[in-house]
Length: 63
Length: 202
Image (cartoon, rainbow over all chains, first blue to last red; front, top):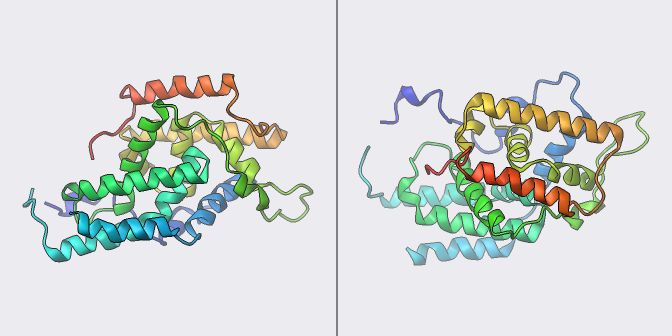
């Protein structure tokens, strides 16, 4: 049932491409708007802490 | 709607996609609740829930959007238990944004973050999804389980509030967890949690 009718529902771009979608419209963007993105991107760019690697590797054995 | 049993390949795909989305979950959670350690706890919780609910994920749809709904619901639940108090992350205080030419005072990420944390939760999350996460209004509305118009209005109000705050330099002091602010946040949260936007349909 995942046909064309889903087209207009949530089909966000692949990871990483998310940034290009809405980021091109630059009509006098306030400074904080850039800051907001930097805030988000700065976390995205962090190395994933070991706790998550451990968690993810344990998932397989769990279920 | 298809069978409920996943093939080995589908399970592997799920795991891979879930892994890929972790940095985004961390970023979203950090924006929502402010403190890095709490945000990561929240992400852990969301990952476990997502894993347990993986049969409900439709392959081919957005893992990021799907897990954001789970994270958001976990956040709202925890908020109501009063675990988060909108404390901001000292860790970001060191980072300074690159100031535009001709501007004397650079905007600190910590200022940005504190200002963000003063927003009512549903406006904050709307702004995070659209302004930082790069989701469209439609996608954000799906994640929050509300109308597109509602998202637009929340983003608009959040923007106006930040514009005013940062233009005036009226950024709140370190403690955003003072009584008045906190009460206001919790009151708004009651509305949200009362069904005024919580997308429980994973």
